[in-house]
Length: 548
Image (cartoon, rainbow, N blue to C red; front, side, top):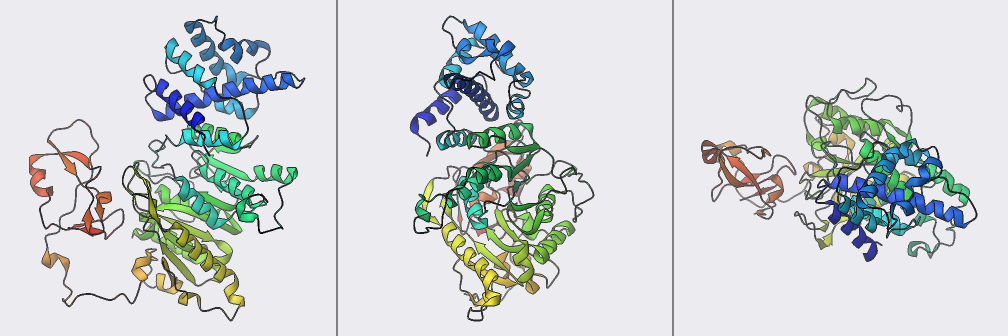
């Protein structure tokens, strides 16, 4: 649990930087670099107290030590020069491990104001090195300000969604765990905490199980080696290294690597894969190498293909995907869904649109893969969470309604039935299990028209039709008008008008909170203006959601 003093220090450090470093990612980088710089000096001081020697700030680097930096006699401009030179030269320091060299790689001071630096380092001086959960939580709080990770289309995954996915897969101490688009290593941290809890006799969930024993030092050492992450961004790699280090990983395995265009790690497989891969492809598409089963240029297609192909024969995966994966009709999407249904997919969890607010209103689902179970099952389970414990507006305030625990319980029941049902004649057929949040569909039904659509509602039967009107083509009853894509250009002509997006269209109502705005020319106003009685139907996001 993050304590209030630590939270206050982090908030204060950001407040000091915001005037000179407005970009949140740069703020996080500057705080990260300063903390590690301070912690290296703390570790040197601790070594001396225990009768050892300094190893970080020695020789030519002794003059960059924290005590010298914070000396009252040091003037502001001298501090600026000493600290700026120290962080830029640190990658050349022969006394620091490769992990720290990676953290300081290309580090620099982006401002030249002595007073800002002095106030900033004074706050950093209040932190002390402590390899505790408290410090790891503090860093995760710092990372939470990032939100969107640049232009790659990947957004920070909410912590409760990460933990839900980890609980579903339940990684074990001897398994290899991979995130091939790791961002700040949130999935890896959650998986590590899950395993540690499973082996903690004092944890409330284990108190009735006397067989639970703590991990031995050797088991802990092997455990840390089993975690691996890739990311294309050097900034994300740096933050992942620090995040894992502050959670007890002395030698974290995070690599700057493009999972889609590089081949050097193609032959490395994992028992557990957890990921929220980028949703967006660059203009012109990805240019992948030739070893993928699916020929595609879309990043979300390639990433799912990559993860499905890099599971061990008994491997499991949980992957967040945009709704396009579920129903898009292009050849690559259909081929991917066919590959998943035939080889690894066991369940799909539909998340409510708005889980990624305020960064994106995109509708997402979670694909649950299990290679061994998929081969012995002729069904796929579909679950739908209509609420995740938080409001779906921009503020994401906590609410009482949360379907995720029920989905998790029913999904666990379904997976357990797959593991044991074929050997127990007393169990009912899996398609007869009454689920509140989902349904079970035979694979042959998904394959019937070659589309392999993964929208569970498409296969729901027996729903009463509460009308006595004949069915008619929509075009005979209404004028169909496609909407206009949101133009994010800031400087343009026309009139600035409120603009409804998919996220504003809820089931049966219009949510006018946090409306976007967009410029419209006069002729467009006539074409796209809404009038009383108009029916809005979402084509993207959560297709079919409608309101008047």
